[in-house]
Length: 258
Ligand SMILES: [Zn+2]
Ligand SMILES: [Zn+2]
Ligand SMILES: [Zn+2]
Image 1 (spheres, rainbow, N blue to C red):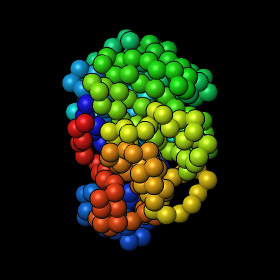
Image 2: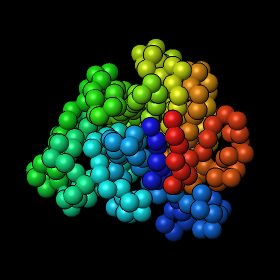
Image 3: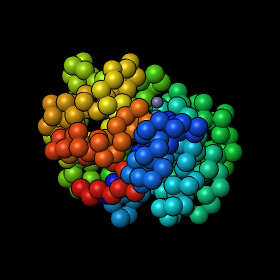
């Protein structure tokens, strides 16, 4: 399978509107520090899966010439992950009538009201995906996991032709209890992509770069990729230097084959 990062920034993107901090200034000339809101494609040549649909969705889909989407997975209801869903209303050719939108149930209920045109015309078939219940999309087996965050939030585990990828979007520090319940889905995975807006700051709703690296090491994950970076974090080059040998820092346009 291949992962394509269409965006790797946190809620504000980098640079942030009106901000002239050092990171935002660097981002004006450094392509890898300039980040649209986090959005990923996971695909295997036959099946294309989109993860999240933030406010930059239209720009990203056009920029990377994504022509077909078979499954849309949304992690949670925060605006940087859902505001682009209204774009699906206009995608006449890229979606089959069977294209499913999977998300936590609470979010699907809200979307029915918020994005009525997108769902009413059957362009996206709302598909509740309960945690720990695997489902198939082409050659992918997908398992949703609950992750702690300020909104009901999912991570997703993908298995495809013997390779396993774990995607953990916005999530608080994943401690012992969470690992006890979910660790078996992650242990010794080929790759984990995880949202880390801050470098070391401890917050109640996000995992830091340092915590994510420890999690990857603890679970024996072969490759840890960090995304959803914000301007309080280090710049791309500084981050790469700081995590050398322990993790990969995603940048917009990065492709990873598994
Ligand atoms: Zn976010
Ligand atoms: Zn800034
Ligand atoms: Zn969030």
